[in-house]
Length: 278
Ligand code: SF4
Ligand code: SF4
Ligand code: FES
Image (cartoon, rainbow, N blue to C red; front, side, top):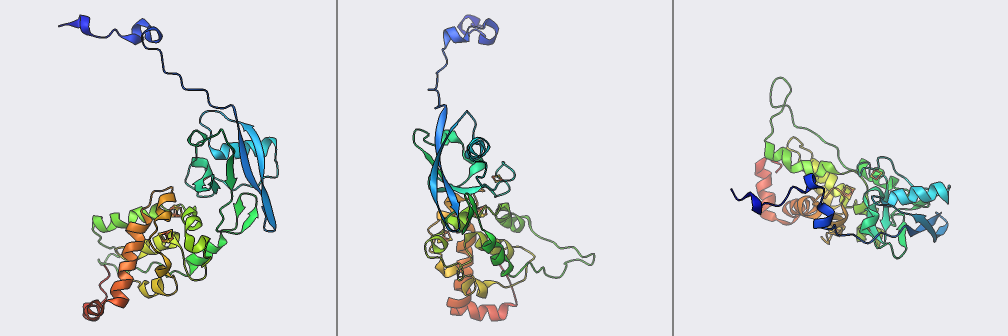
């Protein structure tokens, strides 16, 4: 065996530095400036804070550091610091983001990092917004209504593909970043007419549930305003749970509305089909 052609065991010889000097990354800046929106319902302004940064930090760390050292009254909402509670939503350099999942290493720190509250919701203080509208919207959506049990012991039977189809929608953490970015809510302020992508995902989870027998299609068209969505996919792009909001939730719901209201043959067939939900 030609052992002489094998590379020496670098761990054994301790010669790694001599043979292959490690590629040195340039040192990150030791400080960075965060341009944070400070204010309340009456108005506000961006205020610059310079703070130290270190490898591994996320935007929420920097905000907490600023809060601890320079601005004790800076209001910020957070809970899990793990991308799961949906509390720390904000706009970082103009993009809807979870602050706890946005690494400073992903941002150009040579210029100030702007951190602003979500603009689609009324400000409460600094980075905290009033998202209660979302919870009121949810109460307008018809809840889960299961069909009668399939077996005498009160249990149901479902196929695995039908179960799998709704799992994606159940990953939603209600961060409302999709609501923040949707132009129907953000620019056109149609909160009274349109429930927004988060709640279209919620309706999809109910409508596609294999046991659910409630009919929400008429509500989708009228009370929930699904027609306002023009499939820009901005909501899908910002979802931290990578839910395919437009393709997997909104478009199939739109198809149901079209089938129900704009397809005469489909309506005739439905009369004869006795409540067969897809
Ligand atoms: S795809 Fe529809 S719901 Fe999503 S952001 Fe665009 S308009 Fe809003
Ligand atoms: S669908 Fe995605 S972006 Fe929208 S609230 Fe849920 S997790 Fe957040
Ligand atoms: S603190 Fe929970 S998602 Fe950021």
